[in-house]
Amino acid sequence: MTALVIDDEVQIRRLLRLALESRGYTVHEAESGRLGLQEAAFCRPDVVLLDLGLPDMDGLEVLKELRGWSDVPVLVLSVRDREDVKISALEYGADDYVTKPFGTGELLARLAAIQRRRHTGESPEITVGPLVLHLDRNEAELAGEPMKLTPTEFAFLALLARHAGKIVTQRQLLREVWGPQGDGQTHYLRVYANHLRKKLGDRLVLRNEPGIGYRLLEPS
Image (cartoon, rainbow, N blue to C red; front, side, top):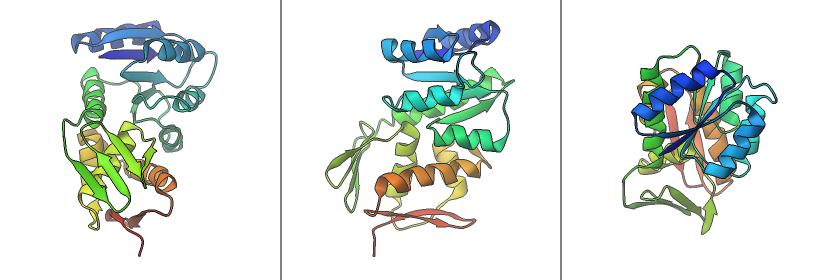
């Protein structure tokens, strides 16, 4: 497994390198956004840890550019703790968001959750109307055409598809997609539900049951 750390603080990069190497990752580093994008294209990491406060460009712009050609899992690290910033990061394609300062235990737990979403280890397929999910390789097709989904989008959609037609509660979605650290982060659900609605179009309905959860339905 390869991790790319994009952060301009030497101390943070050193801390992350130690933590990640202890879990068996090979770690690449970049101290600016442009170098980070170049390194991501060169080394094709399994996960990216991205700071938002970079010297040459905003981390959100790095994320936006990265999402133009890669679905690599991205964990954002930032001192910015406002909800609107977190929502923007999720809308631009981040898989999770950790506020600095952070504990390495929490960081590694969130990273493990991201990796579980990518490597589910399941073999069957799930079919809901025109949607087919290949759980063994985290790939989806809609009406015979491939869907481009990030690991978190796939995990969200797969959980709804497993219970198609039934309500999946907010708590269950947050727990199973983001892990225990997701409790209470309901803005994650709003953002990712909007992502999926755009990608599903009118082929399937992703309905919000206010205050309760979400359900996936075939159009009536």
